[in-house]
Image (cartoon, rainbow, N blue to C red; front, side, top):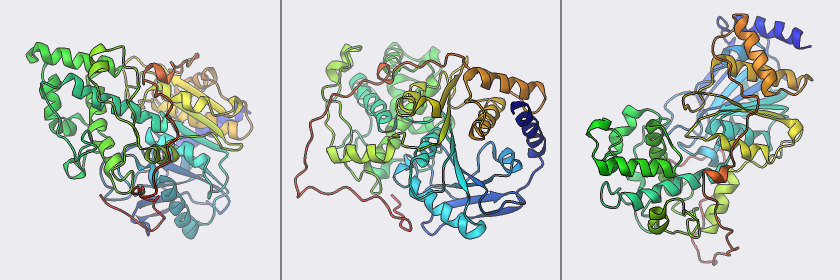
Length: 453
């Protein structure tokens, strides 16, 4: 069966570069979200649809989204592919599932109802792909492909609040950050957040917004002209955050200052409520931060809302999940895989790492990405469950056959450190019932309504 599958894959790969979708649709959905749909010649109702999920973008969409790095191959294999640009920038989980429901309705209107959907995405999109697999209102999901997913969900933001408040403790005498309105002074006001930062990995675009951070750490200066205090503070913050690469430090600080502020301030997200707790957290590995970090306590309703929209619970029915991570990712750390592994039955999940020498975020080679996709397809069709070793073998066969290019670096062990070794665990919080007079959280947006900060 694998030999026959390889022959089919090789044919599809050979055709993919020249294939153009026979049917293409794009525009804005009734809610305002941009979308794109492509389908190959011969696609019929009942055939499969890939729902591609893009990663975190901090710019408002101005046109139809892309369909992902495997679009041509998927079309060559007979899949339709569709994507929404989402109705929200940044942490778009508050509308992303409904955005995909709206996308599916548009797809059915134009091409008919698919027999199944295959969620696929990376980074934030990898988490959305996982959550689509457990969401109602879609055709069956028998397989999902999730690359470097932010699967820690709400807990990934514990990393952000820790670094934000640790910055104040370390940089109190230099590079003081601009405050927001009380009581959330650590979160910038929406009017002080740039709106065109993209995925926040573009250092040229991001660094000019971090002048205060540069005064504290000198991170954008040549090492030779940083003073001793700058070097000490930068080293302290990077050690605290388990970051070894300065480019990743800059990206993480960008998420902390802008994306987290948008998360708590935006009226269509948490609407000015604090979901984070540092009270009772042990930061003893750094006595200065342990003594000086601000201690805050979450609004229980805001914390519950963030968990509701962000956390993956593994309720995917019979779906098979293939999830991959680059081994030295310092933006969405490999320990995010823990949150997939602990809720998924082992016979429905293949979770692997690729072993990289230099830290990247989702820096898979083309060969690795194709191998993962083809292994998932074969597994879905009845082949044996893929392992790191079988993925490595498949990847090497594709490269040797000249079908695709790139390294094959699947780690046969794929061991991850516990998430709590990198992100300090939160103490259990007592159940708190808010008084009736408290201002309610903004509701989840229904399809057709759009709130722009």
